[in-house]
Length: 281
Image 1: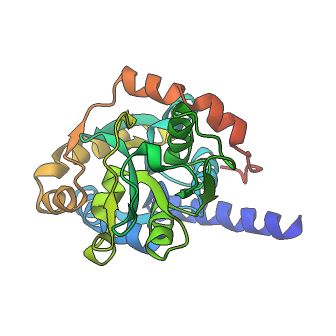
Image 2: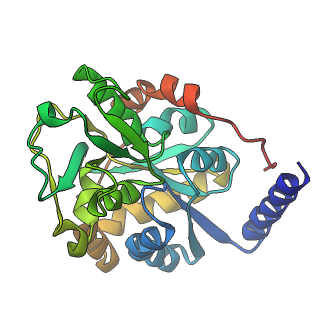
């Protein structure tokens, strides 16, 4: 369609202009609204701009599917993503740099006045999930399936644009339970947390935390500079602020086990993923 083509041309020109101007485009997986992602990652952006002496700009995407498409089309120079996209990005030439130390854990959130106490109480509930290609939509549906609960019969799934949108749906009374990650729940403001509570359930999935990757065609020298900057980030003033606020716990190496964990979800990602026409690199 002409409109889509025009948008693709505009985005390609934007990427080319950014490269010429020395802009480093930092892409963040859309687990939150763009305004919240900007706020959360401002210390990282400011630090990288200072150390690398480059203009660093934060970007995200409408949803996880668009984020994966944008990443594969080269829209981001450095990106932060969850484990289920890691194998496809590595296969596409992205270089894993580091991942957050703290693991991601499946977390269910409900209102404080809701009588739900355990997984046995999920029957008949309206369950809000982040968008279908997010890691915790996939993990949440698998976990519910492991409890022998059938969607549309034993519970009623409802898809929302992000983790936070799902949580806010519960706060507003539009859903009974939200499926999210422990780190997202920890980052919610007290104005939201004061109305909600996490469920005390067992056998929740624990996965590697979000990873930071660099586009392979940045070159070995620039990738090494970015990696060295990230290595020193936790001890910087900005890093201490960032890791205190997010609860990510610092950095560790990305391992072969992390990639293998992502491979477990790759078939589902590929089954549900719609590849957008490439706009050119």
